[in-house]
Length: 498
Image 1 (cartoon, rainbow, N blue to C red):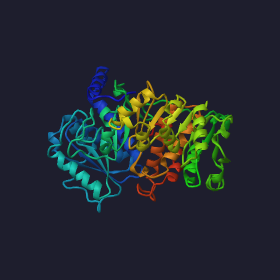
Image 2 (image 1 turned 60 degrees about the vertical axis):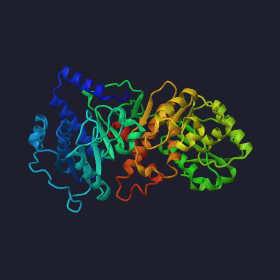
Image 3 (image 1 turned 180 degrees about the vertical axis):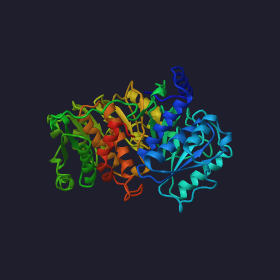
Image 4 (image 1 turned 90 degrees about the vertical axis):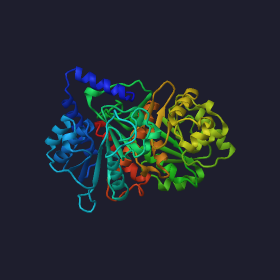
């Protein structure tokens, strides 16, 4: 399902009302589902403050506040830009139903409220654009100050107030959210890389009467919009059906990359994982691997040729290679007949030799921005979204371009934008873990685009869940922490609980 424009969203609303839905019914459904989505994302109740404008975005926020208070145990209150009598009639009704007679007259004091402190940005809705004006700009600045100095988190309702939902253009004083809950559909401008600095993570709040398929070629990776990867395993399922994953990774200097890739394959659902590593590093790598991983030392990558496996992962931590290894690695990548993830030093090898012609639709490339620039230096002047499309049109592999908004695409496919993640993932080794998860998903039978998109979502979601643990923070989060919560991320994908 493609992301929608403002015009397409308004058309969806008009269509819903033509089908018999009233404005209030739509608002109640959206607000209730919004409240439950927020309650699941922030599992530790504290104090939630709704920052309200006077349009229906404020109405959604008021309904969500009631859900958070009554169903999830949050202390709920309000900071309003205008007196209630100046709001729309429907907003006034939802205010009365919430039952908060006296809103806050001053910013909440972090010293006096129950923690955590969550701020709901309900100042402006999707149909607005341009710089914030008073009194909204002052409330936006207040939220920013509480986030920067008092540990508050911000969840924006439908969009961060001040951003253009069609273009992603950020106005001065735009609210910076930790997560944006988009009502009904993903909004096109919010998926762009240029918007990620203010949208934070993204979530789609499923509101069936408002569901629309936009004409945009930019889609979102979320369990609400993509149907695959949700079926339970048959009861008589066995490890052979989960797939054999072969990994070529590691070196004496980079043992951790190999271990993390193997761990990702294990936690990502691979049935039998064999890690091949240079013989000189075998003992070092084997000593650090989980006991479920088979570790084999080899003298040449082509020793893997002809072995039985369902997916192949190459590149993590191989480091500098001599000419013999380089040539054999090229042959292995070119001759493989199974879906293959090409990462890290294997990508650098292809960029250095210029041999993108060996790539085909069995391959998934997983570069970070620096590796992508080496693979396609002529695309550095384009936006991320346009660059991945241009690359996919000339190289038949699936491309996963890492970043705060990871993108996945292939020739004749939409560009899928990942919705999960956290700045805490800015740590070496996260990409190695991701690569292993992709290998496992390929071995389970996912298509390359499905495997790449789902794996990016799972790793980002696992990181989000990890940060709900009291002993972890954005600064302390490590890839091994993320691996421990991949199981919980799988559950959220299957149940669409995020």
